[in-house]
Image (cartoon, rainbow, N blue to C red; front, top):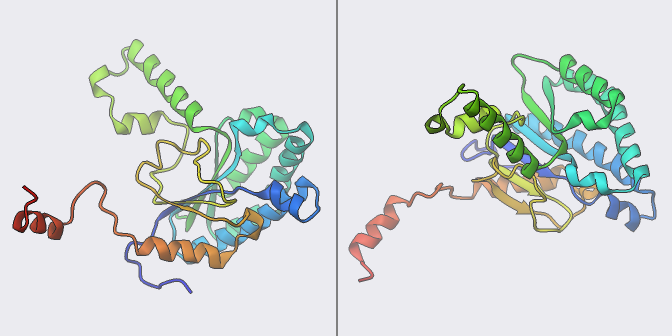
Length: 252
């Protein structure tokens, strides 16, 4: 059971949902069945995120690298996006969850683009309980390239001065509608970031889970949150007690 304390509770959690295909192969199923099962897990984690009073949940649904996968799998994923929106938007509205998509979504074709627009409009809630951000056709490196091009164009057009470029300017130039991530969870056993929100995870606590995403459940999610609560986050600062120890017991 999750600790009820609000101390050090993450407000923004990001998830790299890895392992759908390997789960399907392990269970002698089609790859598309693994993705379907993965969508049902998202539904559970969204519900739990609302209960845990998270502000934002950002999930990695489809990366720029995923276009290299077999055409049949990509087509199945496109259909799954449409089906998931049709199935879950009414429930998201009821839970007061606002849905946002980001990435190069234009690459997914008109049907998906129209469905995304519908989902975002239907869940456009002023006082949402949770922002559910879905990375679709997204890559962290490409996002940085896009930001660079946008800011460079602004400088060349004399809309902004070079010396005025700061973190806020970079954030505003990004197509990513999220703030910094507190906790990043990756399932599937691999220990890498896979080009996910490279700028926004600068100070994120990262937890790698051996389970494939379709096997991930609420208890696993709550365990990650509890583990986060026990982490002393210093953001580069040193606690005063350590400074005092250095003063009393210098190493020189």
